[in-house]
Length: 61
Image (cartoon, rainbow, N blue to C red; front, side, top):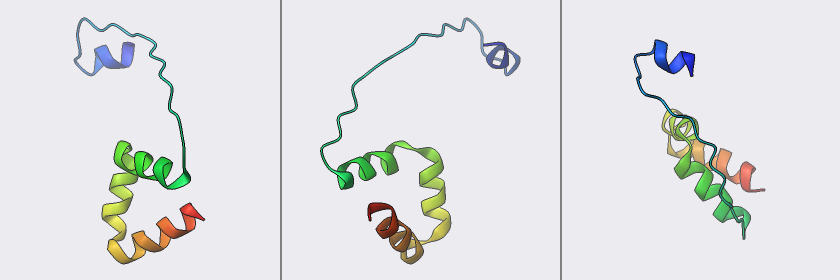
């Protein structure tokens, strides 16, 4: 919390949140990870379409 205050945030409240994350298929899991992860999105944009598809095939395998 100290880091948040040092960054300029005020009145911070930290709460633990738990939520089920059911995975029915590997492709569904992959899709959710790609959509919900900023670092993965940045990697995808940096690789370009063709190279990203190659990496995606490896991840799904």
